[in-house]
Amino acid sequence: MTVLFALAADIRDIKPPVYFKGSYFFLILLATAGALALIAFLANFLYKKYKKNKTIPLAPPKTPYEIACEALSRLKSQDLPSHGKMKEYYSGLSGIVRVYTEGRFAIRAPEMTTEEFLHFLRNSDALSGPHKNLLKEFLVLCDAVKFAKYGPSRKESGESMISAKKIIDETKPVPKEPEEVAVV
Image (cartoon, rainbow, N blue to C red; front, side, top):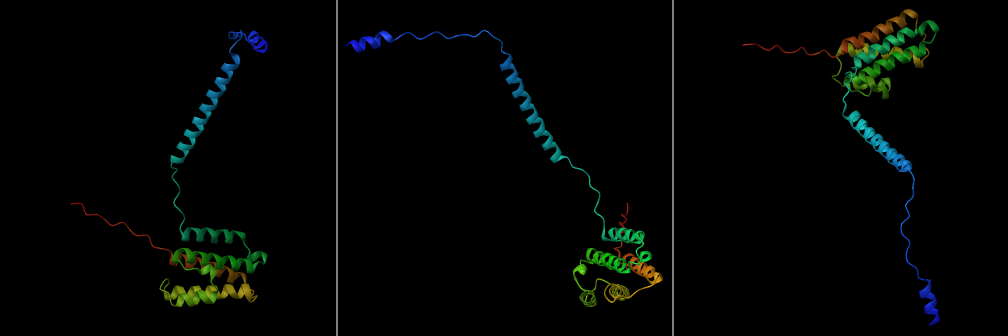
């Protein structure tokens, strides 16, 4: 019994709450930081949403004709024949014409050998007879320079540029004229 009495004497009442005198500075600082973080998150979210929905008008894609003409003018401005770089010059010329025919006629010309390409053209209606002959002469000359170490003159290199330009100019698509509507 003495043990129970000793435990009962040890029981005390709870203490009332303690109120601290002080400022709410840290609480206000924490609330302000939280509000600023929420505003920053919402601003970022709205900016990304607006940015996704904003449509920027893009320039129309360039046609194969425009791309080829720009490439020919860049190659011409490099003036490779005067520096004795005939192989690079003719590689560039044939590459431009092959990429043009790929874009214009959907022929996988850059991946074919000249022989495969010319065989494909024989059975194709993509080009007319005179254009096929001009292209054949052009590609055979390019291959002779690139692989057979043929050394063309500067006049021939200029004529090759003219031939490439002629192939591209004469096979470019003709834009359709808008039909006139009769007003009654």
